Length: 416
Image 1 (cartoon, rainbow, N blue to C red):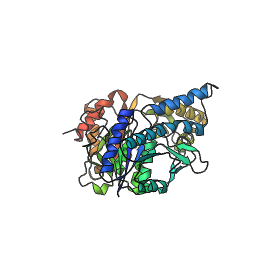
Image 2 (spheres, one colour):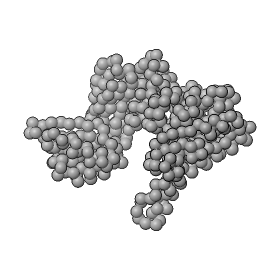
Image 3 (cartoon, rainbow, N blue to C red):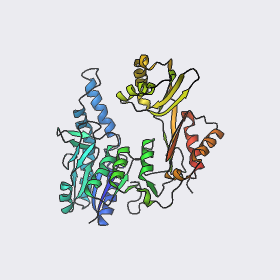
Image 4 (cartoon, rainbow, N blue to C red):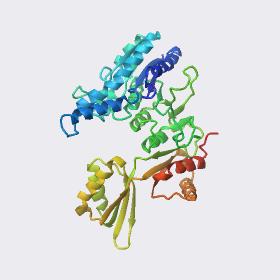
């Protein structure tokens, strides 16, 4: 029998009624003849509640917010355990054989980096035995077990997506149907552009760019694993009628896509901050002096721009995640004597807008067309980065929706 992995996000399993709806989606595939594994997230809001309890417990003892990460994982992983048990119970009451599985029972082996572990191995032996008995496997996403310590680990925010593609990669499933919280893949966030539509197919490479540039449909690592192992992934909505769901968007190899649009989607990220170092000495090694300490502090840097002046100095502008803005400034001030800059300036009222599409490889002037359209709307561009299949611009945050609407229409992505 063919095997299928289905993943459901927290909104899809937010309450018992929605869990019952998910069970109907699973029932449809079982009746179609599939052996089904279901990966579930915690019920909507539950992980945040558990994280809050960890902080409250730590701060009730001392003012130090640092706490044992292994015990943190033991607490926050329990949200998915509740969901998997409730869904297995519901399926059983519907006459479908099912059992819940925790990450350590399969096992999904990971590194020992608690709260951000990486999957190292997934065994299919236990799941195979369950399938042989006609069971649906309901798996707690987001969690695994350290191969070294035997402790429960978690995979970071969005980790259930990673679980969902790691299981079919190990178990040779036909495909993975992912039902994320946002209800499916769109050409942009429908809240910014209601005319956004669901493309039929998107390449792994395009989805990887979208995920890393602000689209929160899938976690970046899940797309990487799917691409490496060739796991065909459908992004669908659990809120469709279980009896007649829409096909969703297929994430697949580029070779499967006959007609490529120049631009496939518009992504945006409000989690950006801009930093500019003024009058930096223009000499060999200055870039290493700036970005080395930031890397040592685990601060990711993006959109680097260097402007050289005639007096042998340069201005260096770059972006960092908004959450790391103040920490980045502190790191730079501490390294000021080594770097040798006159002043540091910054801004947090910025947003990064990106256009993604493998069709850019064979079309010239794609970015120039966007720059012209944005200028006609009075939108100033602070920084630009490009690659073979995408370009990004940094603009003032107040112009986010206008820029998204402008580019979405410009590249013919509006709903027909």
